[in-house]
Length: 378
Picture (cartoon, rainbow, N blue to C red):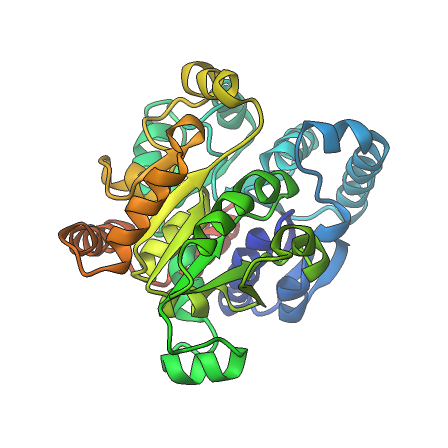
């Protein structure tokens, strides 16, 4: 059968590659064509566009790249019509993928959505469209499974693909000493991992606050987990004058060996918890109190911004969102995580519960098998 897969970000490339492996395991003759990255390309098939050539983030970026966006939409639509796949598989990336789902649906092509759009957080109006144009929706959290079901959507939950990615990480059994030796990190100091996001805006507003805390803890080794979408040049203007290191392609390894982490909200908060690293969730953006008010009253429809707290339905990790952040609050929380405190121990206990909620590895294979079997039946 012919599969057309669209992933528009580094995380989508990772989860897409694991899904492709699962599809090939069930359908060895699968003909796969995709928009993705190097990881998906390594599995096989034909790449149409690399996500680095399609990624557009933020309102300003969208406005200044309208021509590029239109060209990508046109190319994708034309390519889908010419190749006539049996199914279009979409991975997150709703700004691009939902219009493509609508296009495929109108042209009689089945649409499977893997890693459902987070309409439970914002833009709930998209739910009606999803119900109309998506044939099978795959969720990755138990709470969102219940959310979509209440709208009468055919929902399939097979676990969370982060568990597969973590289980398959390189150097999984590596000791702290060997990791530090390989990456040039000082193993005589406690490591604090800094995960400042993968967008320029996130870097601009969150990394300076993280580096301010690094300056207050010379007894620790602060290490930035370099995002796949960035290079050292992206970090250079921020880290000048600060005693921090950057490592690329080592995020899981860094977090698993860190004493604690400061994490910009997103999937990274869940991954940090699944790797048993105590964390502080930090999310700062433009607009100060005005943006804080607008976000909480209008745009954000859930009680928490971190996937840890959302899945546990309580505050397991502290969230410093916009006006909730102060340097002193950050300093106090970090001290509690660096020391062996009741606060740190309770967080690790909550992580154990979270892991039981999320489930074990194998999500990618189970979802892929379900997709292939559903296609074979029709």
